[in-house]
Image 1 (cartoon, helix red, strand yellow):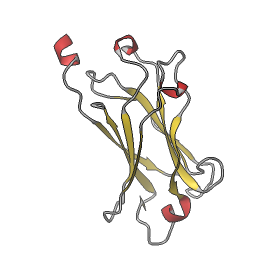
Image 2: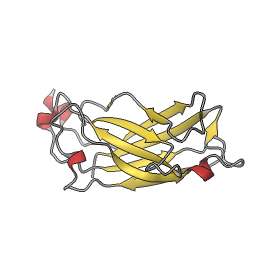
Image 3: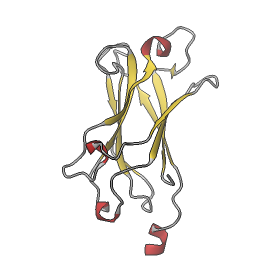
Length: 155
């Protein structure tokens, strides 16, 4: 069993569609996804949260990763240092938008969680709302926004 837990890590890719309810243009809309647990060999336990209002200015879609306490935390190497890439998927064309970040060692958001979860951290100005809601934009289709999160476990 242990050998399967120590195999070479591969990137984790998660497709996270979010269906908007009424108020798709509400500047305080928040979408949160249930905790995401990767393949047991990677022990990654995160939660993705997104905000249409960026850093509270009503200008950007923000995407954050929350590191949550997990059953195998004692076996992980801390702090969490893996490259995280968020992609906003163009649902009709090929104009996908990606941005990545590598957590800084000094950030408390990526240390071993001492409570249920750490403070969210990520990309506060991921994508401008005026481009997301532009008439020619095809990022929102049938009131659904599709995001992909990739965690490169090999880095």
